[in-house]
Amino acid sequence: MKKSLPLKFIAYTLIAVSLMTVGVAAQTEPETVKKVNFGYSQNPKTKSKSTTGKNVDKPNNPPTSEGEIFDNQKRTEIIAENPAVENKEFESRSIASKTLEVVKRANLKAVSPTEIYKIGVGDVLFISLQNAPAKASTYFTVLNDNTIDYPLANEMVLVGGLTTEEIEDLLKEKIKLYENPQISVKVREHASHAVTVLGLVEKAGEKFLPREAVPLFMIRAEAIVQPKADLLIIKRANAETEQIDLKDAKSDDILIFPGDLLEFKSSDNSPTGSTNSQFYFIGGNIKTAGQKDYHQDLTLTQAILASGGLRKANVKKVVIRRKNQAGLLALMEFDLNSIKDGKQPDPLIKAGDTIEIIN
Image (cartoon, rainbow, N blue to C red; front, side, top):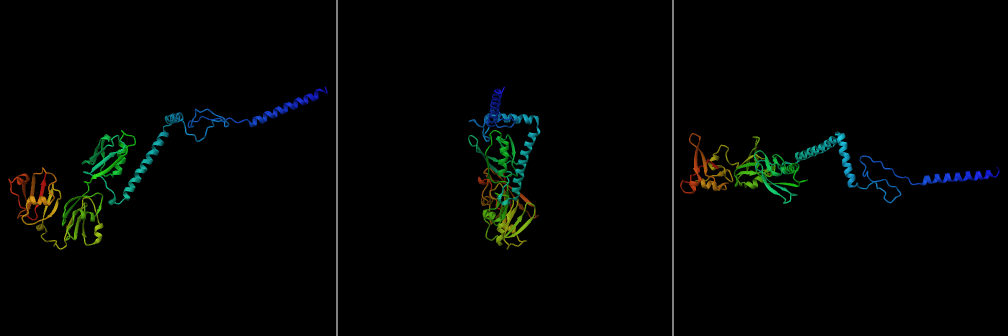
């Protein structure tokens, strides 16, 4: 019995040492990382690996294609179960789009009219699609209803009142044949913003503005104002009238707007004087319409040539209106072809006559 006690003690000691060894081993054993497969995990199909292994997942690894497909599928399922998610995303995009539009329009309002041009009827646009196979480029004329017939839009496109930048954005939305279409819109011919110039100028008639407004010196340079003209009468499109002293250096900075009528005069002329005795007036299908200097023995053919000639060669009819003794306008019609062929005399023009070239 006494001999069995030491043996039991030794056995208990060995068991205690074994338990301590197992405990230490349990504390130092590497933990296995357990991954939870949430709906938006980067790669849910990848098996969990020990942190001490060679293939340790990096938290910033890009997702695999399978993972991306899985994410899209999960997103579709979530939207199907909760449509409000997609509505919120759509509302977010709509708000961003509207905000951008408001900012653009606010910027346009802040821009000076001399730095902007809004498209109108008769303007010719050069539209180029840069990422088309043949880089399609075509000219389009703005029609009377302010639209252009752009084939890739599959409908008439309303462009009146827009800038070229706004038209580019509009066409990008309407073109479905190409992904992310690269559109370029330029104005090749300005024809909608017209002013009329009369009086003491070398080139009277209609002038077309390349901006919403231009300073007066641009009109003076294009019309070639005569030196004796020192007074300008501007009849605005809103029926207001302004009288400008051209001897004032600041007059060149006055803004001219579409629809204005400008008449250059000399201050030496009496307001009640016989101004009509010095000029005749010509309009219609003529290159430079307006008020022209009259001289004695001026013929119809000479008056047409002095106005730059006809816009179209097929013009035949000319109407001359002249006041009679009763102060009423008497109408006379002439055939240009007959005059050119010598079958009809070339009529003399009188001071104050109004000549209309009819197509």
